[in-house]
Length: 404
Image (spheres, rainbow, N blue to C red):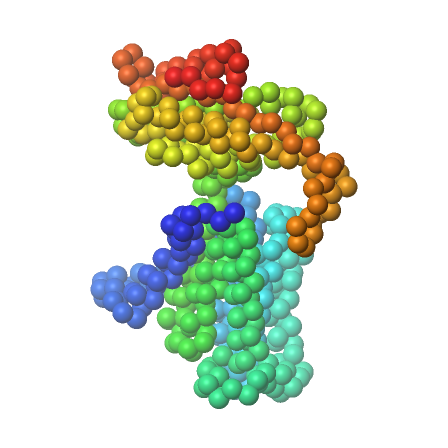
């Protein structure tokens, strides 16, 4: 399920697309004042230092390795000698760089000072050594292989980027785009935009200072993506995708003087877990969360904890929120939950499949209690407590109902 177009656009372009656009604007369209330019040489080192620190502190080894790959690639281009050795570096770096970023984007976090981490570090460091060794022994053959045209297209002949490297970039960008569309993670978007950022200086053969700043911006995009991803882990519930309780607490501190809080609890949820297992319970939580995320009336849904959720209505009293909460209750009750038979095929058959007699339709309902900020209830904790009391009244009254 894809998010709304606005949220998806924000998720896709921020921060990677924004940082790339800002770098291109400052480097080519509206350069910074001369007073600021002396600080440019420190920019790559600041990005590298901040990235290494955050990667160590947040246990994000992929960030550390990606920054090392970017730094080694940029320095290999900057320090390569003239002649055949320089041409070999100019052909090998843009071929290996996208492949390395794709590989790193798919790896799981295994730490840096571990066996897996040291093996990955060895792989990163072995590549420039291998290129250097090949240049010494079979330089002409390798250079011919890396620069050999793949297709006869005159428009590609004038590009500084050899066709094998260009193909690696195109395929890597497609892979990372599909991966981002499927996962929609901040770090997945970071790898995509980092790769897109190093393409212009390589494809257009930009001079060293500009190329260095583009590579540093690619590192900055990865650093910002890790920060964004860490923020999401702290403020968003991993199972349901809804904002978590910490996000609710912060929102309540700045919501204003008039609002309504609704506490939502899944009826008999413990029985689901005890009878069908925690996997089914998790699926029920996801289903309910998907309904809560579509609440109308300006409401915002949060995962409060366990089988409890919260819906916040800024600027609305209880009477204004109750119709939307009632519609929400009906939406959950009408959706139900289908427990798939254990022998049901994993993939949906083509055409209209026959109804599986082993499937079991489960009834899922919620009880809701709501309270607004008023009178002595002038603190968020008191409003939440009052909504909890209303929720208990709904449960005592027979469940599957709304009390305000």
